[in-house]
Length: 211
Image (cartoon, rainbow, N blue to C red; front, side, top):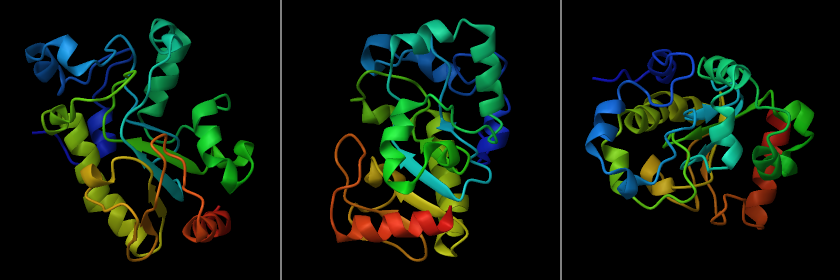
């Protein structure tokens, strides 16, 4: 049984590992063409200092760029991911994807140390269509359970700000709702950007005050 502590779970990963040991038996049974994951990359369940980040953004899965696969062969990239799996590493300075999605909150040079991104799926893919695999992968179940039992309660009592920007139903949230404390599932675009409305302005103001 996988542990519900996300950091203990990812501490089981060996340096340079492409698949979490708990997920490997499931992938061994699945047809690679059915799930579409790029298993030659390094898993990206989360990025940023998730242990302590005052702001956490929830997404579905990491995308895929060719350099995700080529980088996985380089020792310096493997070392970085190994540190990243411990939950304290800031988001890389050149992480354009994260910088674009947080630009309303302030300076990226500061934000990268204070914001974390948590995905349901740890594995890279160009597109994600097989939602049934979420229930079978221990890594996905751990991400959801840890969010629901640890992260969401922290947000509800105001210790963190948690904003769901993709796949709200799979996180156990309802899009368009503001929950108790600092837990939000706002209106978003398919790419995971906040929809322009009054709620967005209030959310941006809150995040700026927190960071």
